[in-house]
Image (cartoon, rainbow, N blue to C red; front, side, top):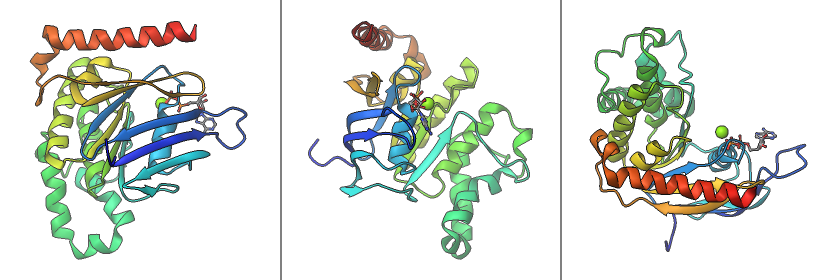
Length: 261
Ligand SMILES: Nc1ncnc2c1ncn2[C@@H]1O[C@H](COP(=O)(O)OP(=O)(O)O)[C@@H](O)[C@H]1O
Ligand SMILES: [Mg+2]
């Protein structure tokens, strides 16, 4: 990759007051518009890596660069969604989606309210939600709330979308529907996505490249590019090629465990 869009270059992160680094000498290159997944055992530093990319924590050593510019504090370039949808219960769905614009892009929001509204509705449509804009979060299922939180993460047209186990709390059927919604959102918005997940089938469904993190402190152990054609459908999940890809990934994780043991 000649000029990566996002690059972690020899990055270590030691939290304030921590004795040992959470991440050490981590390298990662992401192309513009690429969808990457990061998998690895609990505690290996996946969420810490997301905090570095979002600028919540500056790198202790090395650099995190977006288009060559060093990230050392939070910027408006990033959208985020987590396991818990964290919608505000007193705001309706449309008001929840518009919240980042009201907070971060105040002037823009007042000047272009009609445009913002139509963007929010376009995103809702993309994730397959209609006629919910006036409802409140507690009137929606968990899967619907998570769809809304994906829309909220994208409303300010971020260049990078950070997803930290966003589907982990959902049941298997809802989860698979959300993979489809996420694939549609990604192809419509063309944003660069980093997905942290412990669900290997999910990584294979959504990502172009899958990074395996491990070690203490954490770092990238191997990267695998995903050969499966796009767009992917839920029927693909049960094809031999798909299953083989998931098994290869599982095997790679097994090797990492053996090395550590
Ligand atoms: N805010 C923090 N302060 C100190 N240590 C932290 C903080 N957040 C995470 N850690 C530590 O950093 C390591 C990696 O954690 P984390 O990035 O959350 O892993 P993962 O997301 O892969 O489960 C763990 O040992 C964890 O205890
Ligand atoms: Mg985590």
